[in-house]
Image (cartoon, rainbow, N blue to C red; front, top):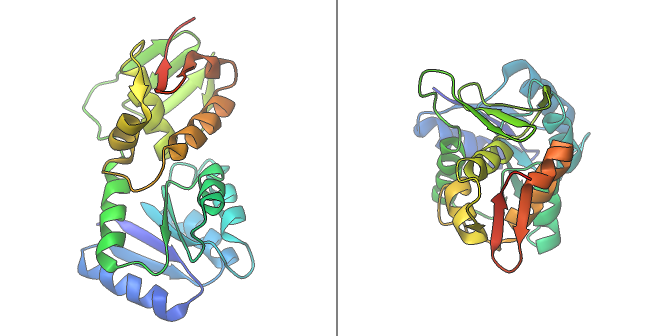
Length: 226
């Protein structure tokens, strides 16, 4: 049974979401403010976090950064729940490491579909170690680890899936639309700036190896050894 942590200060909404998750076979946990949400995430290490943007104690964006910059919680996918629907708000959410973004009010069906899609991004073990090496970059697909020149790089689930998608097709150009479909796991409702934002974060984290990700102007990206 997968555990989902709901960090939401609207008590009625949190309880409703928890009820619907439980009906679908998930184990819901609820935290009503930022500090208790951070503590619950680090203590329980849930499979996914539903995170409200406006929270008492710690804002959702700051909390997301804290989760993504901590080794124990960096790989936990985060879906942001917010009443703000402007493009800049979505971009900020993705820039701090959110894996998806749902604007309130939302239907239970939409939320469950988004949760299932995000959880599907976790790549199943196929048995046996598999390493991909491109220049200074090494990807351990079995253990979901990435390192550059022997130094481990901590990536979010979505960042890892995006990098692996490019690495498994080294030298081949991937359109933004195709990356949205392959990495986000469903017909993503949104603009392709989502891909650009994640690519920028990925390049920054990879340091010198970030140069392996090439932009193909007007189309998409490819990963190619120098």
